[in-house]
Image 1 (cartoon, one colour):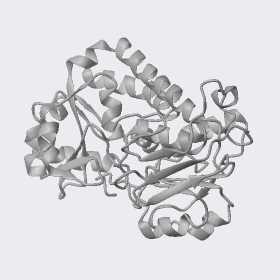
Image 2 (cartoon, helix red, strand yellow; image 1 turned 90 degrees about the vertical axis):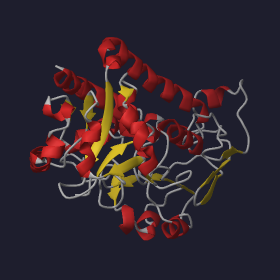
Image 3 (spheres, helix red, strand yellow; image 1 turned 180 degrees about the horizontal axis):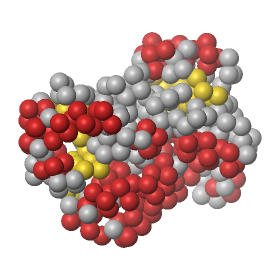
Length: 352
């Protein structure tokens, strides 16, 4: 398993908020609901609602013109299904993500939320390089959401011929979590609800910081490995799993800023030789993950890696549970509460 977290088809698990118009996402709203429009304020612009305002969303691969309230939504990539569900729209299908799924084949936080609502679970479809426009067309969608995905131009051209399709703003697998929420909410005709979802996530993080004030006394680096004979990497602060940790109060270690010069486009990370792992010696806490226990043992057995001060001293937060690793790599209304109740005890153990 390639752990570089480019988030591509191998199922490896590796900007500023604007309301309706953002230059990063180039989201262009054809009109804005008035402050006194009670229907839109109450979110009735969603499926079956009468207050939908047509919208055009421009992105790296083209533009999506959405003229009526989407009722049959397909999501590709990561994170968009969760925001849609939080907005009251359960997708008819989501990209299958076996690395992180539970026995039902669904990501557990998605399954729990959909079952609690009493809706039918989304159909699981093939994504990545094998995504099929024909399979999507058979679902009769009126919107395809893929703002955090690796969709190619060729795939986009085929899928957008089936239904309006929203891809990423600039580069594959690179989007700020607030922009993703804003984009999904705008596409679903619920732009006013984006702020509430973002504020709710911010409150979750604020509570965690208040309950754990000592987190702010430590800096961190969120690293990944690609195996004992491959380069290592460090996630940059904008990458969602690193942003998750920073939002808990931890400070970004200076070495992370130094490594930005080696950024790999499309990964929100920088790579460096494993022989230079001692560059991390001054970091207080190492966050990472391993594909399994064998991967953990292999890496810890390497003198240069196992000798990193934080790892040697046990100040390493490094889960192997695939569902948790997946959830903690995304910031959205469903993953944050699901992750934090599990993350905080892990972190406390590492600090102890």
